[in-house]
Length: 487
Ligand SMILES: [Ca+2]
Ligand SMILES: [Ca+2]
Image: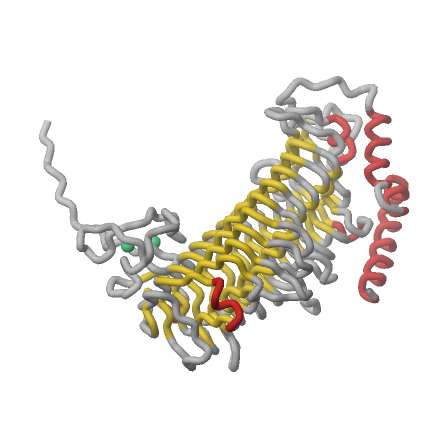
């Protein structure tokens, strides 16, 4: 907290030197007042702003003027001005430059007429929070009870709390944004519906340790896709990479990359609520000091119907951890772990591919996974959990001790998966891998980590069969002699 206070003092100092305090007196004084300031500003500008037809574009630039026309040749200066003017269907293009201002969308779009705040194509737009006070649990980019909004292509750095956040909102898209050095989450969704968080990069977030780098809490129907969440601000511990938590329901988490973090790469945690219907696939976690990926019910909520497939987790302490943290009850129901590759996890003395530490289970299925060369054990299960697990057709490699290892029905035991280049962590299958065509068909995913369709005939016997692991091997393209067509 000491450094935080110091930083705020520093912020205030720079802030005063810029002589822009007038606008922000309200914002600095407490919760919600920034929104009020925006509303006030909107009211002040209401008279000269005609209702705009859908598709009208406004431009905003650091060298603009709020009394200009707001078009490409006469851009406005502040977000406040653009926010006040933007009507459903409008796009606010923000020109390249550095902005020391919060972006607080004020008006909702409508279905089919979203309001979009976007970086002007090809230009670098930075919102720098260094001198901008943000109240605790608010964002540098923040919307509350707002609907049909897209925030796209912005760089949001040094935010005093969240970088980009939506609360109590619906139909919100955050895409192609970059956040760096936020005090708490880089991107967060709280109490929303229909949220898309796609192709963002969240770097060095959660300097404070509060919340997670990318947080989705109490959100109904969402996609978290192709985000890259990585690294810790020097001198801090950072936090979990991607957390889906509380009563999050109907979610898809796919194509994300998490690395160089401390607690967990991707974490689905019911906490005290009923969290259900999640699909988690084609994600990668590596260089995480604790769990690459994990499930939890930290305060007794039911974690239900979680489908985990085609993920790759390596060079972490554990590949995938089913946690019994943190209270006496932590119920899991209908958890499906199919066709993942968990390899090379562990430090000098300990590390597990799949760890089932939670015995409060109804129906856990572990099938078609490659679990290879993890330091302490490949698949390890606490004895009380054994009765609730269906397991088969996994390939485990590098057994340490029979007492530590769990075996499913028909598992390939202690054989090498023959990865293409394990030293470089290319964990695709090579031509002679025993994982090829050795998977269990029922319930297996119909595509693989790369998006290749499954099942393919990988051994040349003419029968398409599912492989074990995240990769479905395709035979090298046969030389195909096309008939010569003469015209
Ligand atoms: Ca196959
Ligand atoms: Ca493949």
